[in-house]
Length: 131
Image (cartoon, rainbow, N blue to C red; front, side, top):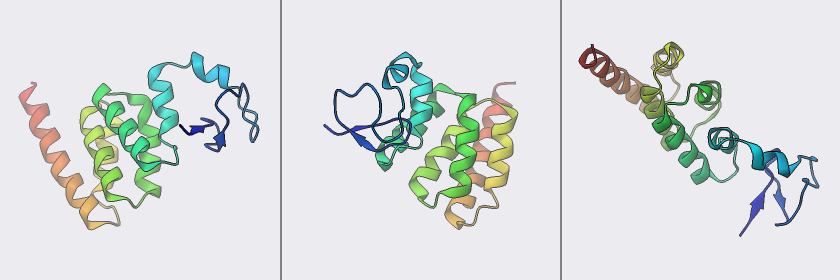
């Protein structure tokens, strides 16, 4: 297994108590909630781990993920990761979620902007059905 520091994401030996690179106290990580650990994983160097974290945070409807989702929408180019972010935004019931979806309709990637249109349409249908 490969172990990464959740503070700087450098590889670390298995039984370290502090990251040799950044000094992150790994015992603190053990005290974090599941959602807090997922939020940290949004910056993981392995793309699949980021995708899994985005998907779960969206399924959980975690509003604390919104700033990181915004960062991903602004910085990332990977369509599959951004697609998961948009699906996650559809499931997070918060006004900021809709704002991010609306801004994603202007995304530099046509695929992302088209999917944002579709997600907003679906979200509108869901909102109408729940009333």
